Amino acid sequence: MGDFFAYVQRNYGDILSYTLEHIQLLGVSLTIAILIGVPVGIYLTTNEQLAETVLQAASIILTIPSIALFGVMIPVLSLIGQGIGFLPAVIALILYSQLPIIRNTYTGINNVDPNIRDAAKGLGMTTMQRLLKVEIPNSLPLIMAGVRTATVLSIGIGAIAAFIGSGGLGVLIDMGISRGNRNMIVAGALSISILAITADFFLKTLQNKFSPKEV
Image 1: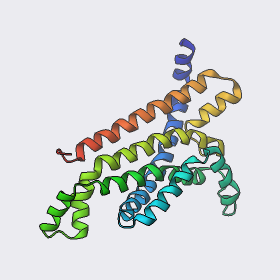
Image 2 (image 1 turned 120 degrees about the horizontal axis):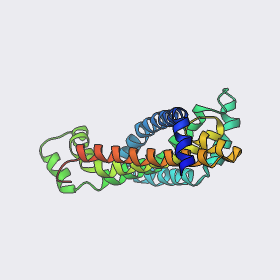
Image 3 (image 1 turned 60 degrees about the horizontal axis):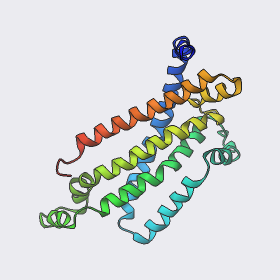
Image 4 (image 1 turned 60 degrees about the vertical axis):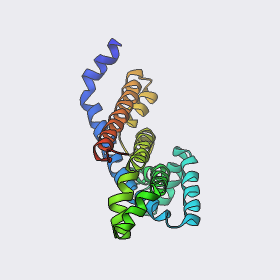
């Protein structure tokens, strides 16, 4: 353990730099994934037939091994000069995040108490007003659970994205394996775990803050 702490003390600047790269990668990909997944999940509540197709497609994407998906993207995105690096990693993380976000949004909106929805209609609310003031607030815990799952999933997969030059904490693990340096591997893995726990705690705090008290 002494060697590990000495390594961290000597290289905390590099570890912090890789952590910031990891956060940047996740921040961009999850923001886009939420902007896509939540509206899609809401729309699917109005089209049950399309919902089944989209959820199956998202499930299939999630079963593709991450290293294989990154490998497929290299020749495809090479056509626009972006075969490796940040862009393919962002696209892959967006795709992997869709299933938990879409499914939880779809399930959350569908599970809103019909009596509450009817009461909103009785008050004369429009469809958009019911969505914004009743359905989304009441389904927020389930939607946030999907976002939290996507976040933790992406933090782990983001480490593999280092193999296509995206940067991040996966670089430490990659270099540690190639150099046979155990301290680098442990530092990378431990940092990813701490980042995942911190992100989940932060999102849970947001969820508790903005969820209706009676939910």
